[in-house]
Length: 309
Image (cartoon, rainbow, N blue to C red):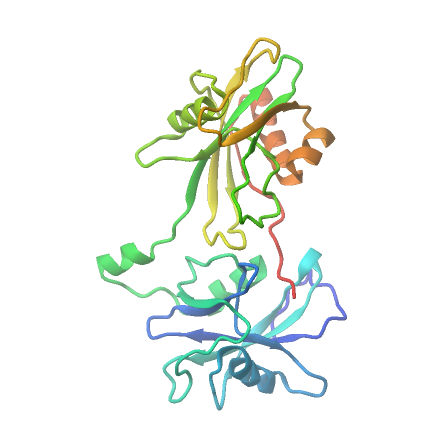
């Protein structure tokens, strides 16, 4: 079995997972109620062989029977960097009797993915699948376009007061919204419109969310965000510099009511507490780029979510 040198032991029981592939090499993933995707898997019981647990996993979570699976490898995966050993086995979906109609007993849905277009899996699972699952075959142009990896393109406006405080906005929470950051402070910004470049989009979002009409300045940062549970696509966010404004002399407004409040926060602990450490990290990257005059590229957040029970 293959394991990362950084894996740390854990008392949690190991898992047996199955990489099920279809005729063109796509991998079967199951979606949990919390929005996260995972391989069909089950805990290995005491005195149970992992291969038996893998066959049992297909029956328990997919309602599918398989007489045999072949060893594929293994990896460590768990929250907070703790290694939870996963024994991984392979099965062709087109093996005789391998899969009929799926009956999901613990998941909300299933889907098939090429390994270059995976949704919100843990990073360790992504690395393993890219190393061991079949490569994407040559597809017709319509099939290729339909399965090409997607990303959300977003923009953000960086506007500070003369004393260095950063302008943040609070959006109206649309119910139901169970995201951990729902209702927290955020940068003025949003998703780019079709045919809209990032400076134009940043200026539009700032105008719509604050009433301030000013052109976008230099590109400060391009941050890439891991696919989050329930989102399924990565986010590429462009941070533009909008200079400084005096909070006492500007009138902030949002005509459509999407934004409910505005505030100026000091970067550091104050901003982290209000907007969350990930947006605090993004703010530090953008402000460092403003100070150095160099555009920053980074991953946002720096620590993606890990798999959990």
